[in-house]
Amino acid sequence: MTIDSSGRVTRGVTPAWRLGLSADSNQTSSNAVDVPFDVTSGSNFFLSGGVTYSSSTYKITVPVAGIYMFGSTARVDGATAGNYLNMKIIKNSETTKQEQYYHLEDDVSNVYHSVSMSGIYNCSASDTLKVSMTAQSDTNWHFDSATYFWGYLVG
Image (cartoon, rainbow, N blue to C red):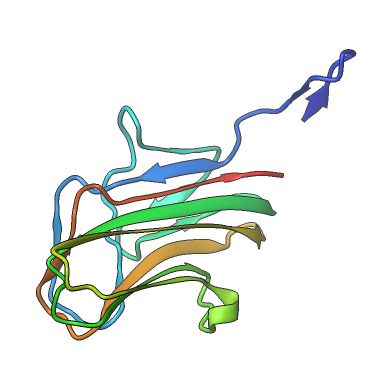
């Protein structure tokens, strides 16, 4: 990071990401399902500044310590059998609601839902983040391709 004589702050490549889905992703579990992002490059999708993504664990890994802003929007279609959708953004293997970002969407009687959330984590180098969704009591639903996960190093 540098500051020039007029106070402008510049820095090199900032760790950031935006992931997506190439097509709808069918789900058959009423248990928590990690969102299987499969688009990491293209006109609006990227991994930059050393951020990596594992297509087997569905986790991004941040390269440097700092404060990260992140968010996710998941369009869920066909989850009409249960009572709620529960989206979580999970850092490492955090298990309590106080350690996760957590969103509960009630009354899932409609055909589709868009669940969105954002937050901020203080991360260490090599911390991981993933998006998880539960469609309570439903075994026939899918993530629509309008499902995203994004984030960047704030400072």
